[in-house]
Image 1 (cartoon, rainbow, N blue to C red):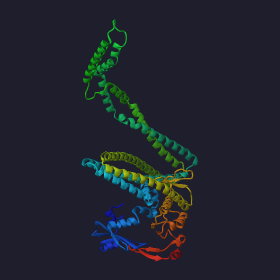
Image 2 (image 1 turned 180 degrees about the vertical axis):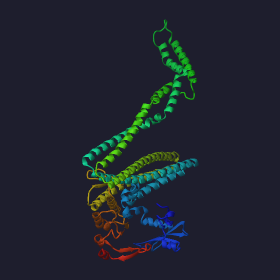
Image 3 (image 1 turned 45 degrees about the horizontal axis):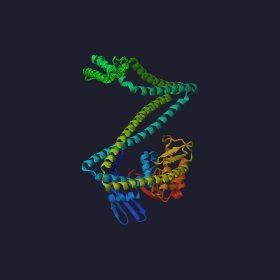
Length: 612
């Protein structure tokens, strides 16, 4: 997307800017967009204008809305427009038919929020957000200055984390579309390769394909096995000199006189007092218990002093206790002479490379056993190269998606922790009774609004689901890959086949996605009860003939109180025009003979039909 400045002034050859080219050449400085419509109270005119002088824009724009009774400017004018048609609704009522399937593929979170607003549920969220803001403000104003400063810092950190996570999620959504596009492209390339391979002798082809499938399975198994083994000990395998030095230090510690003496003293301390005083044979006459306790205490003290003295003579820079040092030496010992293990790992890597070579050879064999011409063989090799490149890119993007998902999860954890600290600070310091009572009332209201939202969502979800399925069955007449559509609690759409299994978005054709998006728009308009004009450019793009007729017969005559379509002459021929002629209020032909002046001329639909 261009920046605002680029949108106004232009962005190279991609976009020439808002101002008409001829007007700019003539030295004019002001350009504007004007919209006029009728309401019960009379005609309304809205105009947004910019001033561009000497190829520069000062960053200002004016907005004026004039009704029969009064005139609004800038912010008041924008508020007037938002009351008539909130910007969140534009997504569903003003679109390009070439891109309508993006409605079905859109970022789920964004789509669901917009659907909630369109169905009147988003207003409840706005009330809850206002209550939460009020609670935060009351708690904030009740804090001591230093505590307030700490809270502001924590809130700033939370906002930063939230912005970072939102940016990551947007990147993931974009990457998800790229992965789906690459998957579709890879599927097409594979079909082309298989089409060229259809010339081979069937017996040899089947045998080679079985061998290829077996090698692919072995390669996948070897990769899985290596991925589980390699990360655990790779550092020790590739750093034999480091392992050797560590073993030398451990042997030195464990073999030193001080260490040996310390081990002997610790062993004596464990067994000598008990065996000397508590086990037979006892002297005759036996000593008293008090004497036995005294000598036991004295012996233990002497041994402990000697053990401490022995420990003080050990290397202070590297002095683990004997048990830990011994355990470390046992773990490192296999890696001092790990040439065999290194050979095993290297052999596993070579084995993977061998699988790849075998697969390439099998691909060539599949080609050579047939009777492909030189031209077909060249095409085959080009398709294989494209397939391999696509697969590498797809693997890289999937790895990137996993990394982004991990980063997003990490940011979510940090954000949850930051919010928890903020809430704890507010709760701890918000001790004003009046504030607490206001907060308690606001929270009860918030719970009430949450219950209201849940109730309304449940009711409208069922209505929306029924309407989507009804309209989709009307529009989709050629086949039944999708048997029904489910709308979940959060207005997410799930497509199911006749067996109740999920149908993936990537398996749907562009035309089917466009029909699904059309059914969604139709259902939203019907369930919401809102009557806004519907404006569609290229209304029949990417849809086959049978479904074009269904859309013309059933959707556009019922889509809204006012429907404006901008078709090309190739989209609406005489036969299609007859289908919608009874519903057409007014028609125009747009002509642009010199590429710079578009002229709208009124025309009768009957004349268009007669002209073909």
